[in-house]
Structure formats: C-alpha cells, structure tokens
Image 1 (cartoon, rainbow, N blue to C red):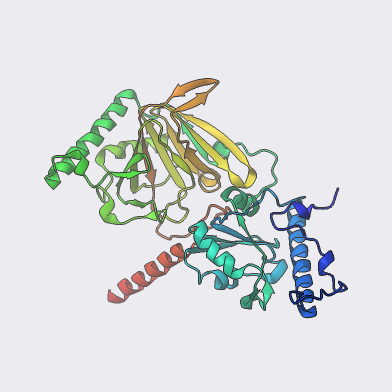
Image 2: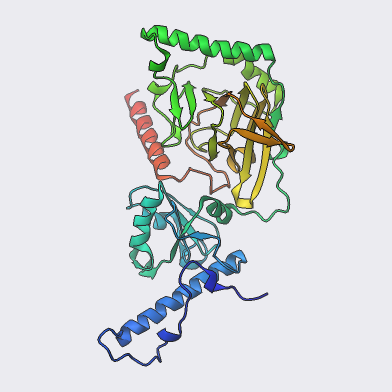
Length: 410
C-alpha cells in the first residue's frame, strides 16, 4: 500500500526543506533567527507526525474529504486522544474549551489519537479554533494542539464508525412500520378532534381569530403544537410548560396508545408528550435524532392526510434508507434506530417512488414521546448523543439541587 498522501490535506503542503536546521541563514533583516528556524522546524515536524498518526489510525490515504476550511461547529483535535496520544480525559479537554461561548461537549473514542469539541455554531467554534490551534496548551503541559473543522457527517463517521458489511434498518435494529394502524374513519375523527380542541382553546381565551392563537408555532414552513410538555427547538430539549396547549394529553389519543402495545408488543412506554405537526406541500424537517436525554428510548409517529417519504441515515457507517409513510401508518423507533440513526423529511414538493414522481399534499403527523426523568443516556452513539452537552449537565445539576431542596423541606 502506498504511503499516506499528506499533500492532499487541507493544510499547506509540508515542505520542510527550507526549515532544516542546516539551512543557510538569510542575510536581510526579515530572516528568521536560528532559534526561530528551529522552532518552525519542530512545529512542522510535530504537525507532520500528528496528521500521519491520524491517517494511520483510520487507515486513510488523505484527509482531503474529512475536513472543511470553513468554520463548522465541530472541532477535531488531531493529536489528542483517550488512551492514545496526549492521554486526554473529558474533564481535562473541557478545561480547554468550556471557557468559550457556545461550547456544548467533548467526545473521545478509546484508543484513538484524536478527539472532538462541539459548539452551537461555526462562528463560536472559530473563536476557540483561533485561540487554541497550534498554540501551547497549559492544560496539557504546553502541548501544541492541531485542530480542524469537521462537517456533521464526517464527525459521525469518525466518532461512531462501525466496520460492518451490512447495516439494514429494520425491526432487528429497532425500526417498526405498521401500515393501516388506524382506519380512514378514525383518521377523520382525529382530524376533527384536533379542530375541536383548537376551537375550545380559542373560546377559553375569548379569541375569535385563529391566527391569534399562541399554541400553534411555525417552525420553518411547518406548524407544531405540543401537549403534555412543549419542545424547545432552540435547545432541542423539553421547553417551557406554558408553551404547551395542555399539560395533559388529549383524551382522543389514549385509545391509540393501547393499540400501539398490540401492534408492537415490546412497546411498554407510557407517553406523556404529544406533538402535532402540519406539513404544507413542500415543507419538511432536516436530518436529526431526537434528544437522547430529553426523551426515553422509543418514539412513535402516526401519519395522517397524504403519503410522504421519510429518509433515515446512519452517518457513522454511511448507511441510508427510506420508508414511504402512507396515511394512517405508524412508525416506531427504538434502540439503534432511535439513538444511532437520524431521520428527515426532505424539503421538496414531490417524492420519487418506484420510478414515479408523486406530488406532495398537506400531511399531518402525531409524535408520541416519553419524558426522561433522569436526563441520562448511556448509548454507544457518541455523535448523536447529547448526554455530555454542557446544557444538559447544567439541567441535571439544577434538577439535583431542586430535589435536594424539596427533600430538605419535607
């Protein structure tokens, strides 16, 4: 096998000939001092060694397709890993990055020479990058850290890669699809119940104009409404209770919860959160995995109205599949399908199904979740897990403190 091609990496080609300790000093005033030349030589050597170790660890020939020159929210620390280069730990790595605004979490993989730091945005990650990249790090004894930006998919590829030959998403991996979960008449009854609830809420507020109702929220081009608990689309976690239409699930949904148990016997959850979504033609939702710590291990989606294609991907293994969600069908995600795969509805006005273009019309969905009281997750899908996010740790600390106060007052 040919040696790794470092010259294809996104950093400058490493030409060390001019940095050799035996180079002839330049005579003009801009020439580097002997000490500076030695420092530059050592920097280039450390950089070359670090990237070479990274390539070897992943059996790669080049980093050209891994890293992005543009700021991204995920930083890859090339030469600092767990049980390998640098003897990093989560707590020590957090010492380096938690001082920067927007920091969310660090991710380390055992016996890998690299690690990750995630931020809310690329701009916030850039501030940390500029401050830490190729600069001595006191937390690690003055070690120079080499940092790159990763795209979301490449982060998952490096963090969760599993060298398996086949990864079909089916019931064995936690994806259940039940066609005709409800009848046409039940579908109509549900839609009428949604309208009745809305009219009742408007009357209770003394509001006559539907547009003034504050319990429907527009998220991009779709409309959402929550029962039991709201969902905060900024934090991607449980939201303020005042944003829910009701703190209880509507009565009309309860008979269908029992039916889920009959359709999928392994379903033992007692859902306490319902999200109703209305998708106008052409709208969709980006690839995502629902928060691991906000909700327990099972999600249920019932489709109403018209069909749509839902896509699933497992970034860590470059796997992709689609499910054609027919009206009145049910999708249940648990285990690997819930934690290790993302799902999405592409933003477009038609789907290509078996070679035929099918136009989209308005679709509704009912999503049932169960709130996680522990705010913990111990899954093995680091790229999609938020258990170590700074915000989630703060939520756990606040919850623990509140519990202590409550117990002390009893």
